[in-house]
Length: 370
Image 1 (cartoon, rainbow, N blue to C red):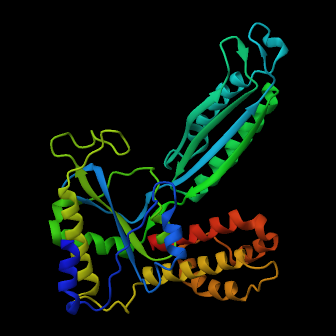
Image 2 (cartoon, helix red, strand yellow; image 1 turned 45 degrees about the horizontal axis):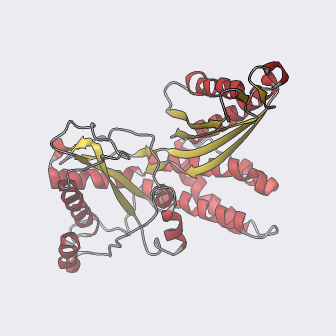
Image 3 (cartoon, one colour; image 1 turned 135 degrees about the vertical axis):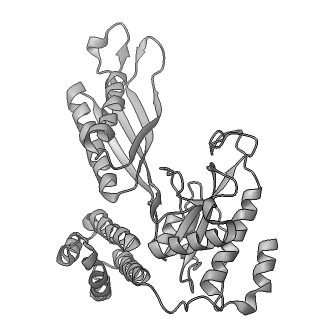
């Protein structure tokens, strides 16, 4: 309330407007998607979000450009064999044995297939199957999550998990059915917006209190906003002052924060507003090359999604028009995305959607780092 009061008191000094977003359902409900559908980003040029972070001491702010939260996907593998009596395993195809080997084999993807300099996690969170100590089950179900920053690694995880599931099926004479559920995409900050936050935090707190955040492969639906607008998702230290930093992690029953962190967040937000919209701030009409590039790629992404949702005979003209500014701005930065390949990929329409979206996201990553 005090933050809003200070903001309202300085309204006359601002060259623009500030929209405060109160969003529900971040934890698994993708509330950001519904907010976007309802028009929350209309009239918005930049967007900023903050996360309380118990991996940092209170009074500090962590900010960096590029990915700061991970692609957060889920999977289910159902292993079906032939059940029987525990005393006669030769008459069965034991899915428990196959599932155990499958869990172990999946871990070789991150240790032997993913570049050691990239980040990736495959976690099997639940293993469900069996009825009794003397019964060979007929089905075992594995459920888990995959995390990555890179879209290339994300695709590799999915491909190798399918291949390993197929291999286990053949080796053990069972049927391992693998399903993948795309979750939240990676949260990728633009370079210019990250610098705005760094400058605001330095003014509000002093340079020694502004740092690079401790990275995490957690997921965050703020990423959907950053797919639509340039912006930055930053971290405010909130570790309880009476406990060692990092000793009270998020998502535990005894979770707690130092509530002074909320005052720190408000102070940085206020300074950010003054920096971006104050009368002494540079005109928001004068966009940096990075911001222009990112806007062009966002326009391309929006045109692509609109076309994919359209009728089977929808015109490619809007998408084709959006390609020109995006490619002219991004290609000099080394984008390994081919314009003709992008359009040709649309021939398969729905079948081309994953690779098409992957190329769009690669362009966004390049725009963020330009």
